[in-house]
Image (tube, rainbow, N blue to C red; front, top):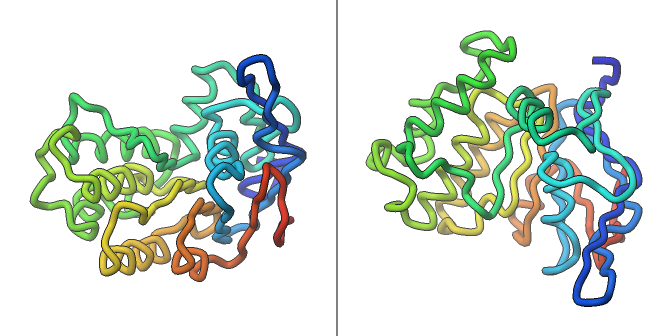
Length: 230
């Protein structure tokens, strides 16, 4: 690791084809996260928030710019290389749950935990699968398959998978969108407790409550940064 910054995105551009036209989803977006920092990304629907999170996670590649994790390039890797890098460093919660349908909730969390454990983290450096499930209120559905979960249970199970094993970078797209107001407070308290201590946390959100818990807020509009950024 040659860069002390856990997450750095430089000059990201992303374009999509819509009919015969090219649509800009992101235009020259840069973002860096200092060790231990939580950044909230806000903006109206269609502003590029989810696109940005996909690029930061290596789930998609930018048309310009790059993303690095501790100086190691994540952008423009093969699918296999990107998946291995995510497994080592990144916990990601997208609006699609990301849960494996043939595994129950506990097995999904344990699988994510085992992938990060093999990357060199010491046991005890992060909450275990059983603790994550209990603290996120999932004990009653720990042996349930994803298809049988409610929206709130699915969101909390996806968050447990993202947190499992203590990732260096935690990326969450609307982490409290499917939970009640009381559950939102619980989820935010746990995120504050379990966020990567020397890594980076990026929360994409419409919630003022979530944004208010962040160390810094970056606002997007029409694919560009219009608020505080660095």
